[in-house]
Image (cartoon, rainbow, N blue to C red; front, side, top):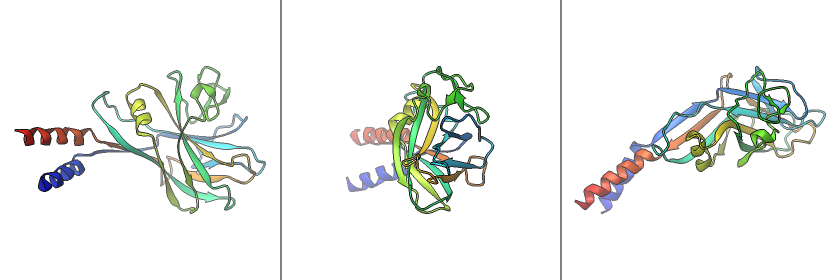
Length: 219
């Protein structure tokens, strides 16, 4: 029994599928402002010098997997923390964003109207049409510029997005104290040397191996 258990764990580790995705688009928005920053290599998260809140939005091309063919047992989002203005206001939230219609934002126009259509309306990082600011995934303390930060992503939420049960619109980075002047933290964008990443762990192959092992042990 002991040997079988060890072998089962080895099988689990060997057959685990990992999807390591790189960001495909990002932007940061100022509240009540229609400027676009999609071509910037730095994403601002938090209050600027005038105390105007800024939020970053990031999206990925999710794997094309049929519903029922995968089991997400964990997922994480990573972004490179480049710099900060001061050493306070360091809690950064990661929130998942889904749309109520299938209408994608772009780096040159991350603003939507009340229906979610990509027009000069309100910033999608705040738009109710995109259920912003979205489902809270995790909160991390940004204490060390020059390093990656890692947030946990709800496995069920990302699985629903992969299955198209909900339309995935990306993630929003929000500073807990975003209204505080000079609370901004800056992260590198997808088109930098250290892009954002989304790492999805698929346990379906593990389940298949476990079923095979259980079947052979019963014979």
